[in-house]
Every structure is written in structure tokens, then in C-alpha cells.
Image 1 (spheres, rainbow over the protein chains, first blue to last red):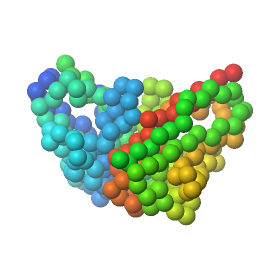
Image 2 (image 1 turned 180 degrees about the vertical axis):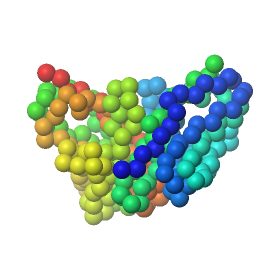
Image 3 (image 1 turned 120 degrees about the horizontal axis):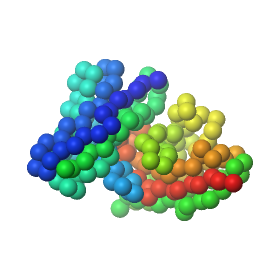
Length: 108
Length: 122
């Protein structure tokens, strides 16, 4: 089955840039979605189709996807960005969704 | 407003059956896939399966195939997730979710229910 690997944690100072990676075999050929989940809340979609932002999501959130790595970048990090982040793809070969392992972003 | 409202928390014993619900509103219920996502305590998100209420087509993750069943009732715009015999390892938060901008069933989930906590304990 298709596996998506994320770093367990990323720490970043306020105002700096956080980059969260999502590794998968030839993930560049798939569409990647990203979620933010704060403690005790349902996930929120922050990026879909690699680079698109839903309405209401700040421009500070951006995505990219190439070859074997997709990335979510959070610019000018704020305390409120502290959360778990998950990547997700639809695997057309198995007709299944797959979630990444998740990354906890801590704001120092 | 597109909304998914899930049924309340459940406490069950091992071996018992359970059916939780997800009531949709604000969109055409039969035109969009509804997905189910499990989150065990302190763990990550796992896609369990999805249903297309228009024709009741279902897809399941191999990890959940045969362990749960998803169904829907078009007349009341409600999707269900059910277990025939619960185990302690089924203790988790369960979410329903849809991609309201992509009817193909492959988009990211932009609308989520509030979650249903299921606790299975003797």
C-alpha cells in the first residue's frame, strides 16, 4: 500500500518559516491535500490540489509538490499555527485515500 | 451553509453492535462522496472508507474492509457507520467528511463533522 512519511515534529520561532514535508513514491504525480488539526478539534483543510487555498485560509500557507516530496510552508509563523498537520493523497491505483503520519508544529 | 452533524458520544461493551450517524445539510446529499476517518487517542488520521449516497457505492481501506459498514439514507440525508461486534481497539474519535468542491470522491475534505467519540470498555 502507498505510504506517506512526515517528520514527527517541527519547531519554529514566531515570525519565521515552517516547512513540513510529506514523502511518497512519485508523489509528484498525485494531488496532495493538507490539514491542520488543533488539540480537541476536527481537522481543517488548509491546502488542496497541491497549491490551492480554501477561502479563509491565510496566504501564509502555501504548498508545493514535486517528484517524491510534497511540502506545506507556513510563512511568518504565529502562535496560533501550533497544531498537528497531515498530508493526504488519493491513490488512483488502489482507489483509496492515504493520510500521512502527521507532524506536530511547535511555536517556540 | 454546508454542514455535517454527527451523533453523540457512545460507550459500549466489547461484542456489542453500534451504528453512528452523520446528517448532511446545505448541499445535494446524493452528489458527493462522504468519507469516514478514524482517530485513535493520541494518534493520527486514518481513512476508513467512503460512500456515494447517489447509488450507495462504497470503498473501504483494506485495514477496515470487513470490520465496519457504511450506508446511507437518502430520504433523511444521513450517512451511517456501523459495527456488528465492537472491540476495545475500536475506541476512537470518528469523523465524517466531504469534499464539497469535488464530486469525484478524490478531493480533500473541506467539510467535517464534529466527530463522534466511541468508547469500548468492559
